Structures are given as C-alpha cells and as structure tokens.
Image (cartoon, rainbow, N blue to C red; front, side, top):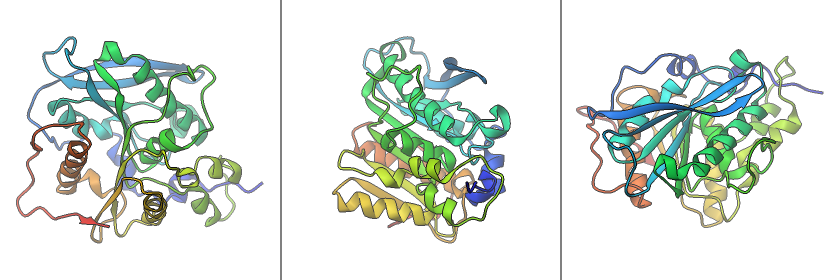
Length: 305
C-alpha cells in the first residue's frame, strides 16, 4: 500500500510552522493580565494530554457562562506545542472568552499517526463541553481553532464523523459552533495523491477519512479561514469555501498577498489576523464591543476572497 512521505514535507509545511510551536512567541497581543491553569483532559497509552486554559483575571466562577475557543497548534502532526497560540489565547481571554490551547499526540513525541490527533481533538472539545459549568463556559458557544495541521484538526472536529476515542462520552457532541482556521490543511487526500511513495505512516484510506472537505454539509458551523496567497494549502481552502457557499453556509476567507504558509505567526500579520478573528467572533455574538488589539503602523490589509 502506498504511504505518505514524511508528513511535514507532504503538507509543504515550512520551517516557520515548526518553529512557531516550539517556543513561547515573543509577540504579545494584549497587556491585560489573564489567569492561567493546566488541566489533564485525557490519559493515553503515550501519556497525559493537557488543556492550557486562559481566562479573564480575578474570576473564580463566572456569573455568566462565556464562549470558549479551543486552539490546536500546527506542525504537520509531527511536532509543535500549545505555546504557538498563547498570544491569541491571552488576547481572547482579555476580551472575555475562555481560551484554551490544547495538547494532542504528535509523531515526534508520541510515535502516533494523524488519526490519533483527530481523536484527541474531538476528545478535547467533548471534555470542554462536559465540564462547561466548572469552567464557566457556554457549551453552545464553543469555537475550534488552529493553524496548519492544527487548523485541520479543528476542522475535523466539525466535519469528520470517524475517529472517536473509545473512552469518549459519545452523548457529548464534539462538533464546535464555529471555526477559526489559520492556513488549515483541508484536503489531505489530494495532498496524498500528489506525492510519491515514502515511509510516512498515513495510508490513502486514512487520508480520505480525515479530509475535512469530503464532509462539508448543511449543518457545518460558520468558519473563517486565513491564507497567504503563496501557500499551496490555499487550494484546499478554496475548495472548502466553494462547497460551503454552495450550501449557503457562513464561510469567510481572508488572504495576505504573496505571503507563505505560516505567515500569521509573525508581525504584522499576527495582529492583523487576530483583529479579523475578533471581528468574526463579534459578528457571531461571541464577543462584544470593539477589538482592543493595536495594529502596527502602516499594517497591511487582508483581502476578502
């Protein structure tokens, strides 16, 4: 059976995407202090997985249940860390959301295949909903977000029906109410078919089963996608947008001219994309007021596709 080349290469994920998840970003999107804590949400044969929770400071128990966003880091399901989305999580917590950056199993650390990462992402959404009261979360306002492979995982929680962990409570939905996707890999099967044989751990059958674009339906939640126009993964995003709009779904795509994969990790684009994310969440009624993020002087603009 044909096998996928090493995952990072097969997805054309750049060194930028790997490095972004290894160390805490130096860019801060807010000066507001937020509260942080870590919670083990799942114990796997390869070890514990944690949720890194960011919430408005000074609140022990929210009087009003808040929307929640769960971010999944990028790295080709091979590498990366929750640290990648700390800036966005801190910012959204400063705006009043409960923001979470989730661990999941990756090849380099856990020696697992991408289907296990999909399982973990769905487990994370279910755990958050199942513990909504203690977290102060509105279970009807859960957002899945992520970048690159993490954006793929966020999309999988909304679209892929297979790969539920045996230990999960299937009575709790893993489907988010909205998606925020930064250069996500939306068509894994196409990427698989474009490559030669190799020694990676993915089969064509798995690639088809975890391709979000294969499962776009009338009940798919609203989504915002960000891509650089020089990113090869944008083709999968274009396909998703076309399918979603044909079904009358809320689907936005914003692009950065001539920017490569992972552009959103760097200034000024991290600020620009975070502000647009904020505006999207305001439009859904998940945030109030105006974005508080400060854009750099002469910041470039995203283009609506």
